Each structure stands twice: as structure tokens, then as C-alpha cells.
Length: 155
Length: 68
Image (cartoon, rainbow over all chains, first blue to last red; front, side, top):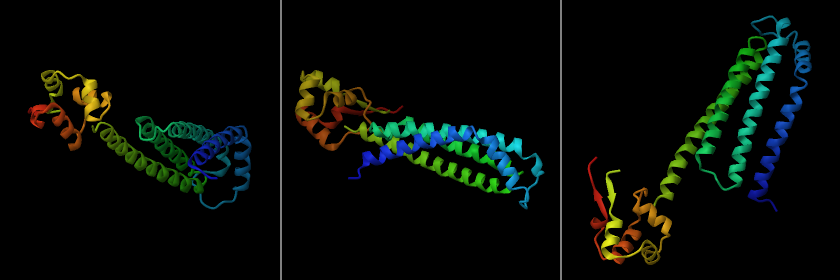
């Protein structure tokens, strides 16, 4: 039977799996970059010359990989706290705030790489939007922590 | 906070311990301690009613407003 505990467990497993994928991908970043440079050689829109794409793409992917790992670590901490029934606490708000900044940072990095391949600029905008959504969620959590504190101190 | 809780003064006047009052009012000693130390953010009317009933006093004897 499906339960909240199992759902939480699945989320934790998926987080760990995603982290494993990030680590695995890190070993193939130069290969992926080389492949992308070759495949996208004739894509229409770009500001900088595609022949100079390899190193910026490697740098972008390494940065984004590290940011993804940082975000996944924060998600892992968040899920661990939730499984301990610590939901509306300051620690979780901090996690959400960090995830929000990580998404925005990844968005900026991707938008810069958009100078070489325009599709990445759109992905960057999406990452910034997601970061903004996380920030609003963090504000909601902040308020919930305050309300819970008031409730806990109502005798 | 400009609201001062004088519960400990009233308890001393009535010579009642925290544990006894907590038991009679039906709250935990930890919550009573939060109330006594002024850390509480709100007091339910039902709790105030029971405290006043047990200590035979008025809400004004327990709570006081002091401008900051």
C-alpha cells in the first residue's frame, strides 16, 4: 500500500540517484562537449563562433554539475528533516533559500553559455524562473515557521 | 514585550507550586514555565479562565501592560 513514508523514501532514493547521475556525468563532460560541438556545428543562432565552444561548454557543465550536486545535497537535508517530522523549521527555510540561489546561479551560467549556443539561454531563463519559484516557496516556509512558532507558544 | 506576566507573584501569594498549578489547570509544567517567563506569544481564554479560577484572581492580577 502506498503511504506518505514510502513517498518520502522514494524522493530520497531519487535524490541520491540524481546525485549519482551528476557524479557519473562529470567524468564525461569533455566527451559530451565535443559531441555537442560536432552535432550543433550548423545551428543557426549564436553570437560567438562555434569552433570556440568546447572550453566554455566544459566550464559551464562543470559549474552546473557542481551546482546540481549542491542543490541535491540541500534536497537530501530537506527530506531528512521532513522524515524526522521537522518540517516548518529554520533549517528547511535555509535549504530552500540555498536551492533558490543555486538555481539562479545555474541560470546565469547557462545564459552566458547561450552566447555560444542560443538554446542554453532559454534553459538558463527557465532555471532562473525555477529559482524564483523556489524563493517564493521559501517565503511561504518562512511565514509558516513564524505561524508554527506562535502556535507552539500559545498556552 | 509590553505585556508583563505576573503569574509567579500570584502563585507566591497563593503559596502554590508550579507543578500543582499545572496539574490543576491542565497544562504541562513546561508550558507553565513558558508562561511564567514571559516567552508565551498568546494565552487562550480557556487557560486564563482556569488559572484565574485556581488562583482566585482576576486576569489583571496576572497580566499587566507596561509602555516600552
